[in-house]
Image (cartoon, rainbow, N blue to C red; front, top):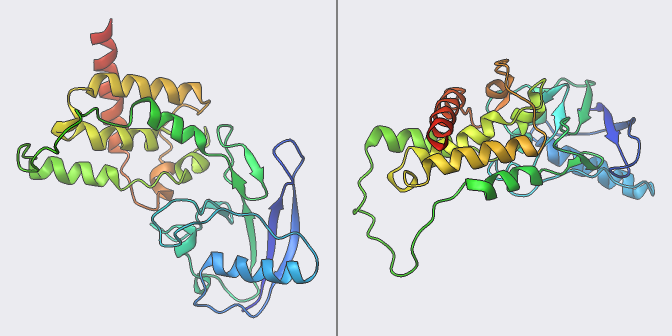
Length: 248
């Protein structure tokens, strides 16, 4: 399979960017999208051209690093799929493919297709944890968790923090990410003592980072590779309102 790639190239965060044209030749349909980019970069290096910078780590759909907008869709058009799990058989031979970085004010471009997502880290630091006493580990059976609560918490905890929700949202909102991180602790007994403080701190940090507001486009849910439900946004809004009233 052969493809024509239109790739965003940007030397640095303060440099102007532009699209450049590359050819990907003799691509196996069983290759992942990132493996295809690896081959393209090998060809560029042979020509003395600087390779395309892009993020990757586990290549197993777990880490959330493979953040690419492919043909206008975060992670590509296959549902519930990260970029590293997207295979070239889902494209047609001779296709033109447009590859861009996440587009969001809170995710500045570092180089080419790499963006700075440390805003997510700071949101987690603001409250995405539980406080525990030091010493011996508590017996796992001391805090029984209802099955429905455990299932809901696990659904929220599936979020890998890739940022596709932010990239897809026309407002650059991170509500789905923050809601998932709030919910997976809020549904467990271990997360109850700091429930109110957590939601206030994380939402306030989200606002400080410059993410936009949610206006219910639901693009976030549509592109999420882990299919995180928008119901968690409604839950977070409700908990934020309760916490704010209690605080005042």
